[in-house]
Amino acid sequence: MELYRVPVQIVPRPGILDPQGAAVVGALKTLGFASVVDVRIGRFLTVDVDADSAEAATLIVQRMCEKLLANPVIEDFALEAPRVQPRGKS
Amino acid sequence: MKFGIVTFPGSNGDYDAYHAAAEALGEEAVYLWHKDHDLKDSDVVILPGGFSYGDYLRAGAIARFSPIMTEVVAHAKRGAPILAICNGFQVACEAGLLPGALMRNISRRFISRVVTVRVENATSMFTHEYFAAQVLRLPIAHGDGRYIADPDVIASLEDDGRVAFRYSAPDGSIGDAYNVNGSVNSIAGILNESGNVLGLMPHPERAVDPLLGVPDGLGLFHSLLAGVAA
Image 1 (tube, rainbow over the protein chains, first blue to last red):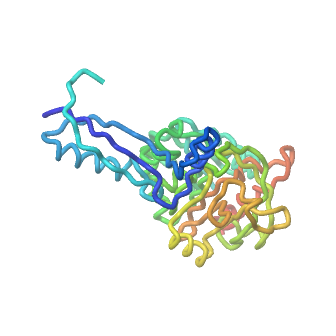
Image 2: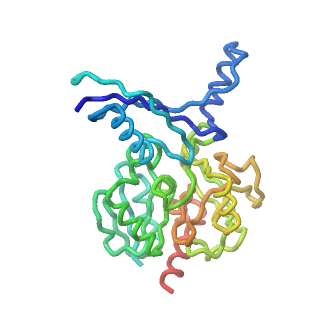
Image 3: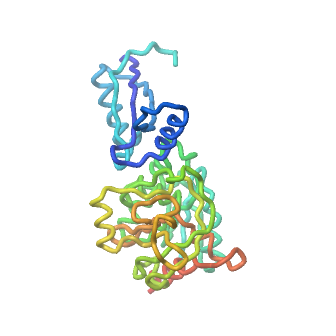
């Protein structure tokens, strides 16, 4: 068993209005970043899991996303490649 | 009739719901602890407002896995009434009792004030004491109340008369100016397919006493009383 760290990105689904992102677009334009077109605000999680392989770690976190971490009505999620994590460090 | 009111860690509308059932209606009411598996023979289950589990992750996302929710879902499947208010509405959506989701208000602000809502369905077990298109004054207090669902879900809600309440002007007209949180089609409350689960963002349980304003929420509780007792 290794300890794997699986990074997870959760963002509002395309077409879903994101008022926070819209506010940040406004602030960026005020600051002079005229080229900004869109900002979507989601969340970034790292999930540490014990697993036999990177593939197994990905599968477990995928199930976590489907069951709890993301709401498929409003959010999409994407997993990054798991990294082996030294134990006892966060 | 017996009202069971679920208390999650972070619920703050449970006492108001108890007051509405026990004092305003004069019916039996009990609190149901989130860790229990016992509905204590309640006829109606109320999922109250508040900030269950601190709204961590998403409003209602963690509360739906509380032990009591297994019983609440089973109660709903038996056709028994579930009244899901504010955070309770969010929990009901996360639990799959109702379709869609509730997102951050379009203004990004927490809104706490009395609003006007129009009764869209005056035949459900929760609303038959109102008349169609009646305008109610009800308080809201939420940061995540913008109702959203896939277009086909919205279409079926509209076609099947499952939109129970809509945010409206005092004269009943609908428009962006009165759509307080930016909900799709100004939706303030919806029914499930069988009509025994109502989710709404406004707080009828905080509008049952003339001392606190207009008791427009009473009709909802009287509807339940008349409907289920019959």
